[in-house]
Image (tube, rainbow, N blue to C red):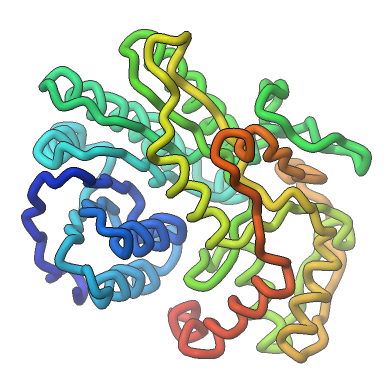
Length: 354
């Protein structure tokens, strides 16, 4: 697949078809690769926008095209706001599961750009719910609708070193950013949708995902590139912020296990939420020092004021997820960072610089 010339493959309707939005994104591409390896048909959608390098997104698609079961993958370049085209594609695909990962990401981007959050995260999310309803109306209901939420929904709950681990039952009425507010809204809209139409849906509250093929706008790769180049890393609050960094393979394992476990329809509202995090928050200054050790270089840092959009600490309580599917994260931070550093050194750096 090169540029926009990649061929759209007509996908049949086998017993297991996954429809993944944001398939050229970090989590979407990793999930598609795993599902292809497990024998799924995968239909992927992405608009390949330029929020960060489209070349990196295209490289992820090229990597999917090189997989042993690539013939079972179909890619469609499409915006979530194109409702008619989206509904036509989803109903033609008749997926077993929808994994809706596409969104306008980033907390800080919302300080300068607001409309993309409303278009992608609200209208786009609503259109995906409409697509799920269209499947049910056509007599081919999706078995499970999974969608990306975020640890950002917990907002001001975490502005203390002694704050308890986040639980899915915590109050999320105080988001600190537009991004977080749209994710809270998505959860509420989906809950109401499940109540009205019986859609079995699961919200995935991701905690700072990192690893090979990651997003270049996030701290792990920003810091990696800075250390490699000897550039200065700005550390908010002197690095005294805490994040529950979670390795990509652990995230994918959780999603794959969750797909065949939808909330039961007819037993209350068929909607649930899960934290997907590492359960072990790390101080950002410690994260930078560990990354420097892995790279064999000394990080250069400078203090920056703590922005109002940044929470102090994220810490996932994943006991609900463990009880549901027996999942627990298994990748130590230094091991995950070693995999990240190896990917950057073996060609990833060129993609990040495009």
